[in-house]
Image (tube, rainbow, N blue to C red):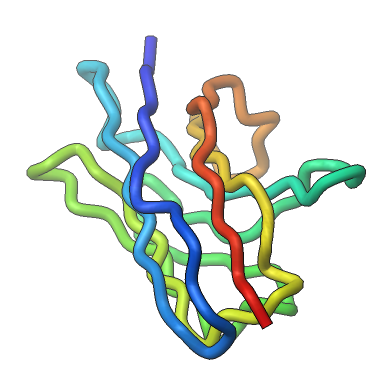
Amino acid sequence: QVQLVESGGGLVQAGGSLRLSCAASGRTWSRYAMGWFRQAPGKERKFVAAIDGSSGTTYYEDSVKGRFTISRDNTKSTVFLQMNSLKPEDTAVYYCAADRTVAGPWDYWGQGTQVTVSS
């Protein structure tokens, strides 16, 4: 069983930065792939970034490549999403997720944290 708690969301101006954190609990957390997803108002939840549990390989949705960075600190059981050069279209609720592989289907989810980017 894996439990996830996100933090770090907030209001930021366009061009600014935020770092999201996701604290995980569970004995085998370090073996899990971790991902970030986001859901804008009236839209479906979409993939943002993921990091493999064993290799550390990272994956990004095209619109965030070069701006967002996913990383993990297994000693602190935490995964991060560093978001730079934020745009108003990045506004969404961001969710942390975990599964055995980056292919999903992402069985474990956090409660979400709101990110709002003003123009």
